[in-house]
Image (cartoon, rainbow, N blue to C red):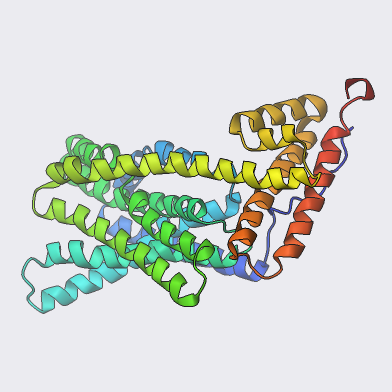
Amino acid sequence: MPGPGVPNPTRRPERRGWVTTGVIISVFLISLAMLSVFFGIDIGIGNSLVAAAVSAVPLLVVVPVFLWVDRMEAEPVRYLIFAFLWGALCAAVGAIILNTGIHLIFLAAHTDNADAVTAVVSAPLVEETLKGAAILFIAWRRRREFDGVIDGIVYAGMAGAGFAFSENILYLGRAFAEAGTSGLTEVFFLRCLMGPFAHPLFTACTGIGIGLAATVARSAAARIAYGTAGLVAAMGLHAIWNLSASVGAYLQVYLAFQMPIFAVFLVGLVLLRQREAGLVRRYLSQYADAGWFTRAEVEMLSSMGQRRSARAWARGLGGRAAVRSMRAFQDSASDLALLRARIVRGSAEPGAGAHERDLLDAVTANRGVVVGQVSPRDR
């Protein structure tokens, strides 16, 4: 029978801070209640349910894309869920309240085209700030493990996907209430098929800025500059997107501007994933030189295909327990490589040496659990 293994220092399933967890759950529940009341009043409960089902469709594409980017050094599921729910609940409620209030101020001031001004000025500032708050919180909360641009993009993508889900419920529900299936289909095509990555793409700019601030910046001023630049870029892209709809040039801007940016974004995701695999290979090779890994292990750990094969091999040896140990071995090795990269750059957090030793201990222990499943004649 396989042994119990050892704790995974990447902290995938750990629960920390019951007080913090309780506060977060309470905030989510309050936001859900407020959002439900708003949707019920604005578009009705039945229309809201139909719109929610339709709004979930683009998530089947958007969420897997960001999870694919994250596979080399997977983020804890609870933080991914937090980012999504923050976008879907807290950011959505905050945006409704603030945008409505600002819109009323514009109306009271007799501002020309108050609707368009709210969409182009208020919405990008408010919504990108609220979505970006999730990334900032996670970067602070996971400052030992927040490894840069990819982490920022992944959490941004989840927050953006969550926000888009709730926003789409509103637009789809209104269209369904006003024009039935034909209206629902039209809005679904424009928002869910043509622009499913819009909000994740905008917020990814903030994620890039925070990722650079966490790993490249050497001073507080530089960290603020990187984070601010990312947020401003997110607001700018969002404003252009909303402006195109306000002036009736949605299709032209979509084809000439948004599609090229989206193509660059996708290529960038692929390159970033390849770069992370290269970092894992480079820095684990240094540990291999010191005897911590074999060359075969380094090759396996820097290839997603070989990682999957290794987990399948472990399952054949010792079932789920062996797979957990193999995954923990892989997680710890990835974290170790990226920690070494931060140490070399001079951006590692205080206590990095102790964290490095913990990861090395976890690598050794989890390797031992897996290897212990191999019969002597097969070794």
